[in-house]
Image (cartoon, rainbow, N blue to C red; front, side, top):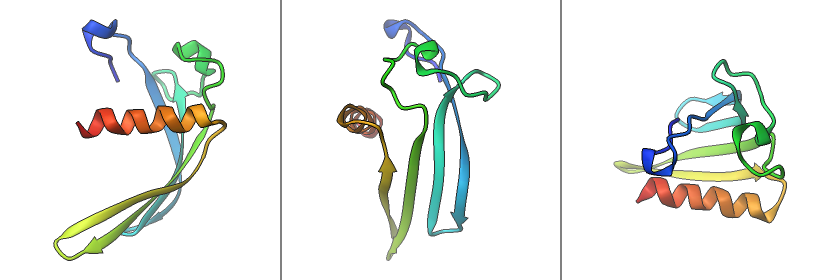
Amino acid sequence: MRAPEAQGGMESYSAGIYKKIVPMKRLEFSSYLSDRDGNAIDPVQAGVPSDFPRHIEFVIEFIAKGERTELKDYGVRMDSRRDVKTRYHGYESVIR
């Protein structure tokens, strides 16, 4: 991913491991910051605060609602309240 030029244009990478896939129903996976080859790196190397979690666990559930699909994102294990605030800030910036 590359930040906009107005924000410095820094490139950053992440990788993860799928732990469970139930087609059309559920995904469970982890995510971590990485180098361009997918090797895990210390968050500080990526330019983020040292208390940024090294691994984040995700559980995503897809629920059929007629013609639409409801997405539930829960069961995430993070290391601090700061992580939760950071994550929801990220959601807000994607949704807008």
